[in-house]
Image 1 (tube, rainbow, N blue to C red):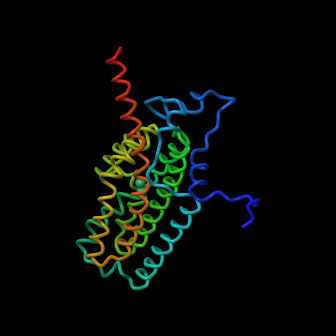
Image 2: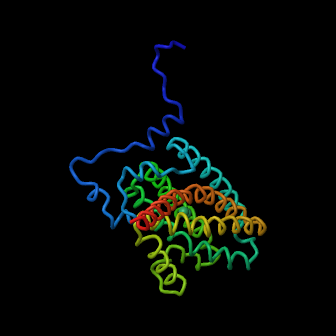
Length: 266
Ligand SMILES: [Fe+2]
Ligand SMILES: [Fe+2]
């Protein structure tokens, strides 16, 4: 190789450069660009977030698109086989009309709300890496909503109650009312920091991952290979974007501890 030839940056060099790219706003103040009502507290300067936010999961846009395309290909191949063999008509009724029905009606619309909150972090998170990962997270959640709505639609031929997946937030049953209230508090009505702590760190780490792994295993045991493939596919996204919240929590704890120690000294 000619030593004079300019060398392209390696993937790791490019990753650092692209993910830590920040700019200094000239026409608006930092407070106007990142209002505290949208970003949340602690209201730290952008330079501090930029320095301290360090996500464990590292993925570039090119890698993300390739991975997601392969995941969708796998799911749609299994779905096609399930449709052709009329799998939904052969499943155990207790499983199909019970736990599967509960999941597929309750989950898709909240997935849409999660894509809105991920977009909020993608705009108002005060670190480039945080915003990039949230952009992927937002696209993940749109994929989850659409994929699961499609599965609910595939089941309407067996029982019309599967149409409830579309109506989830516009019905007044006990489940939609409880879900709307819970998700307004933890997703739709949150700041970027609150969403990172309440949903990506707490809910997605403690609940979603477990829910999707358990459902994948149960579906597999019940011979529902379509739902098993779907939940495994979704879970791989969830375990990635669940990690957005961990660095936010670390910054939150570190700065709160620092502030308390300073207070003691004064
Ligand atoms: Fe999701
Ligand atoms: Fe998620």
